[in-house]
Image (cartoon, rainbow, N blue to C red; front, top):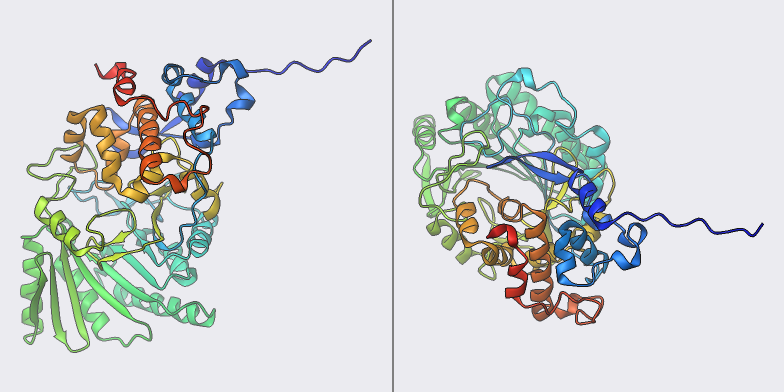
Length: 488
């Protein structure tokens, strides 16, 4: 009997679209409909040729929009863009999503009480994930590693200090509410562990690094934490001699803030020689002695209410215009983009760098540049693999090269009112996810990003973008808009 080859099994585009739509899970971030949805695996990993018969692969813009998730995967499958060689920049590591405080203004909306800090699944990075995060930053040659998050990094104390010990970055930041400063033992223990971590860095011959402790001081935090916590932490730091550079910054989101005023009054009593200098409208320098200086940095008044979607009066793009205009004037190139360290810090642009977050569940995101259907995870990708996956996506590439505002402009084409509403919400750094919250919008933005990049950055294309196979490149904007039937 003649042997026959087994027949290949393909799924229909509709079945694949359905399977993709069923593979989303809720994230920590809320929107008007509830929690935002993140795809369980990056859409750029889908190999359509293995799953769809050749005749079912999209060949027209209409077919792309018939099944928009499949259509977006199809575009990413073309691998149009060259693998970037971005190195340096900033990595924000979130050891946990939990916090013992639960401030009313928290965009993140972490749990309020210590009873909730016992570690449910995916509430914090595991030990293995922490090591992978360390390897990621070292492979990336990160300039700054910042322990932060909507959670409180000191809840995962051991992992936070492991990161401090083992990253090669020359700048290590920790953003903390200072809840551990409510007694002398807690404060001394923190600085003991910090000094020990830097001794171990030296023993391991890691690069000399500066440590920046950023203490959150504002009215909302001080509803739960007394100003005395901050004063106790400052006093202990003044009484110690460190064999590594250390800087303490006080961060407030309110320019006129009662807690900051109370703090300054108490410090003036304790240190009569205190001098206060205004560095700029959003930064104060406190000079207590020649070798004792502290910076206080401000943003603008924002309110959210436990991570829910709340409107803000008179504020655009999460910042008031005075603030954004000032910050932009201080940044090389005059724009705030995912390579800057400026907000409450130094005005630095990492020319060949990127800013990533590694979140408590291992998600790796380009700051303000990763749609929720193409998020790699630290458990599956090292630095190079994650960067390859993220920058397969024209949306992310456009955000990195032109700033997130270029993606917002695409969103404005889709729905100007949606952009206006998103800008008025307290969703700091997460506007893109809210604007591109459906497969149709993400597909539209992918095509438009390809078109814009083809005109402004043809050098990043690995293949000729005008090849007839890339039929979406020349589709007029009006025709693309007509595909967005759900917007009518």
